[in-house]
Amino acid sequence: MKNSVLHPAASRFYADHGWLQSAQTFSFHGNYDPQRIQFGALRVLNDDTVNGGKGFGRHPHDNMEIISIPLEGTLEHQDSIGNVAVIRRGEIQVMSAGTGVYHTEFNKDPDEPVTFLQIWLYPKKLNVAPRYDQMDYTAGDRHNRFQQILSPDPSDDGVWINQDAWFHLAEFDAGFETQYQLKKGGNGVYVFVIDGQVEVNGQSLSTRDGYGFWPESTVSVKAVEKSSLLVIEVPEKW
Image (cartoon, rainbow, N blue to C red):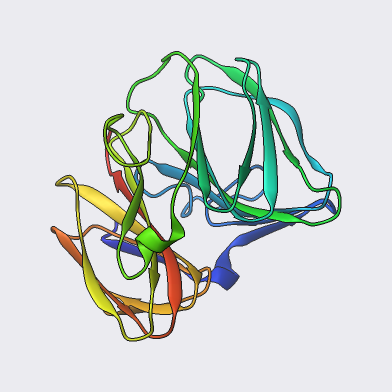
């Protein structure tokens, strides 16, 4: 694997289905590039906007860890293992598809769009029992710090998944500098800028840019302007 990959926002695939606008960092459905299949265990990073009252009908998944992070609006989830839930900005949802699950996702608001990040990771272990979870988190806890929202440990902060991966959200003031410490040796880091402009190990990134690389142990981050970002740490092999 190359040491680093840079995915400017404008280079993402784009799909317009009328009710759904989807910017896709990696190859997805009809959009395909053999050089953009995945980053380690990270397979899908879609930036989706769904019109009011619309959504994804009943469809299946298996052997994939599926994470949804709303950025604006509300998203309703229903699945074949009995879960009915609504997630909003400030919450994270995970579904370990395992041996197989059907679900639907709809915009709960009939008038306003919902924008959310849809992220898929390959699992560490195949054919586990399907599982669903969601959790809210305090926005203030990521002001000028990395707020852990996902890990492989059920007793740790955030939700947990069937993979040696960690997700952190951060909101930095302009000029703020810090470092991210890797949780596991050999993992890679994919930084997705939700808003703003940052420098990550000297690489300049702007809104909706993505940058994946394989650091030794720490990642240096500087906010050029007020910024929010998602840091995804994943294994290269699993």
